[in-house]
Image (cartoon, rainbow, N blue to C red; front, side):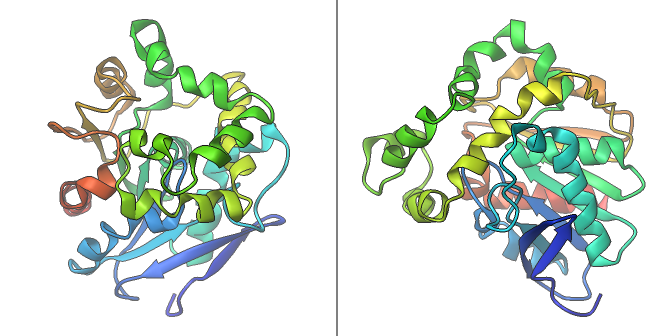
Length: 278
């Protein structure tokens, strides 16, 4: 494909895309997490461009204005992985190198596991394999994930998060996300109308847990985890190795928290480049 991709469709849903870097470079798809959009990769992507890679970062389901289905079941992992494959189709390539952080990591694991013919390599940032995440629940992960049950409630999370995402709020400071990124959450997520769709990723979890088995991943995979991540603990990180059948690297960034794209972009880019090149 010799033209920039600004959008792609999956059925009736239309997704906005940031397409940057050398147009003829190998395509690297970057999937953002909660509560962010494609711009979360703005410190990582240029480091990939410098190495000759083209980056394609979509605003995902619930975030893109024309891709906000209202039903919770429309946010189960199989649907999210389907969006990734639709993007690969729109690029007109057989396979891509796939990267995901946070919820984007869950979508990336699912796409790589179910569609190994469309994913050349996988780099998962922070997020363990979904099955390892479930396995780790009785081993401490449940305590770290308490907020997921809250976010799945109707209406209340929208009300409280709309207030929490206001610039200067104490809640934003407690998140640990650098001010450069946290200061735009109110506009990017609340004012844009993306908050209900973003929360539907949590509300769709019961549909993913019922009958949506995610198999082991067979493609070459790197899992990048930080040992000060408040949300994703060591048991799930350790168990992830059991869900990868292809070449696998587990890379730990010491002393780092959950916000690796914003605080450790060089480490993240190095892991992606090593995986793609390896």
